[in-house]
Image (cartoon, rainbow, N blue to C red):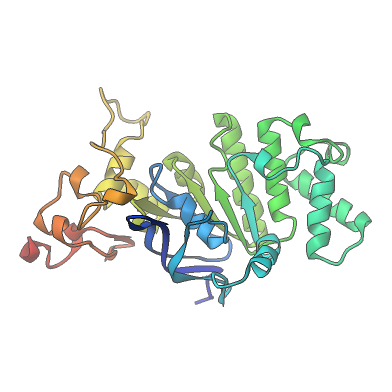
Length: 327
């Protein structure tokens, strides 16, 4: 099998406090192949954005990686210094954030920003870089790109700005694109366009994509595989069709049951009782057990690791051969 573009192994991210270190990402492992989209989904506070930040070395102090490793095309990058990591972020990893204005400097024309990025990571003339920038904007769906390349960010709508950011993320032809809630602030119709564009451009360029979102609808439309996070851990991972149509972990079942569909008419949507635990009070055993209607004694005592369930993996004692004996 080909080596994955991104390989994350037993990643733990913590924040030191006076009461000890709080673990916000706890033993996360996954891989993403070239041209593959891995969706990472979960409630706010699940740790999905922090896992993405750890991959690209943008954890805000005092947070830090406690254990584990991150490899890009086989090369370990979590141990790189700040300058080396900055070069990797610009050339090998592209980033698309929720608010495009955080990626675009409002004082510079968009063309200048794209041209500067291209020339920083490849030996081309300014004329060639500008031609490449225009082509990227055209690919990203900016009509009249040749004229609009000299516009400022505030002269674009939110959806158009996100297209510009996508072109900026891809201008150095990265191996990996991390998209953190790229459609949250956009209208539904624009969301669909941006997601389709992200998927097409990355497939054409063979880039791996880590798509972070709380929207299972976006995941179902875009991802090849999906990782469901809860309280800093991946509780289920598998092919998107399998996870959406046959969720295994009780938390994933709750997420899927909370999505309205036109095919099923119900008086009320399924509701997951309770809320995500705080970092300082994550319960022993399975972190989801206080909200789980399937929980039994072993769930309260021991923390389950991911175990194979047909095409997926789920961190749930319901699928352990010894679950009955341990109850």
